[in-house]
Image (tube, rainbow, N blue to C red):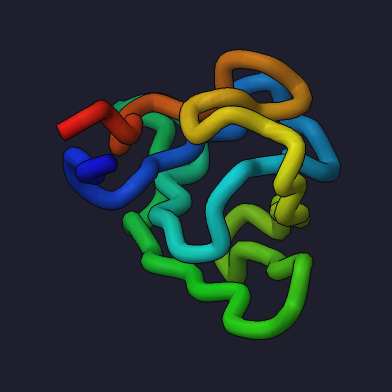
Length: 83
């Protein structure tokens, strides 16, 4: 599989925690024009990380598909495709 860009996530709904299927990603806060500085985050060996701008807790969930999040619809780009 090939990746098209770095996955980007938003938290328009104000969730305390968002489960995601990747450990390296970009948090943009909310949808523009309410976004914060776009920050690249890397969980490394951990399974959780907190965004330093919006305080959203991101948690790795290996059971999710690449563009799937819990709650739904927080991934805005960077989906994996067959190559």
